Amino acid sequence: MQYHHDMTPEITVLDRLLEVSELFQKDMANAFAGTPLTPSRTRLLWELAATGPSTQHALATRLEVSPRNITGLVDALEAGGYVMRSPHPSDRRAIIVSLAASAEEFVRDMQRDHAELSAELLGAVAPADRDALLRGVEAIAGRLRELIEADEQRRAAGESRAAVGE
Image 1: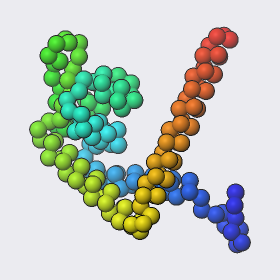
Image 2: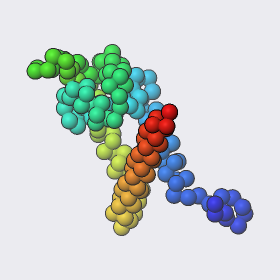
Image 3: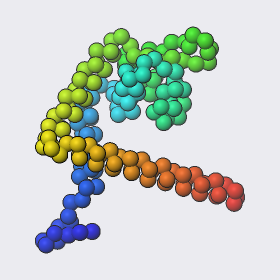
């Protein structure tokens, strides 16, 4: 760990990224206070807005959650009036999830707020630095995805070796 002359730890890029993550979580919690929305439920609404009506299976795959988890998310959003379930036209076992008409304006407002916040945050960066910032953030996100995937693969390999050893 690097220290300043007065022995306080130097703030790292990771420290700042963690702070930004915490601030986004706090902002989202404030924005959805008094609603049944959570980050996971909001992601599902965002996904439906982007891709249109989808089967629960397709949503689970895209959101990388279990079928049981997607059922719980859809149950809560349906109870809150945000989504509707309908039978799949050709597959009796599948359920189609779509945004409820009453939620479409809410999601449009959420998309507008997202765009405004994005512009506001980028506005804090000098115009000459914006391209470099975007490239840097994308590179960091890409590396973090790679590290997580490698860790998951190591875990899966370790678990399968442990299962063979039993």
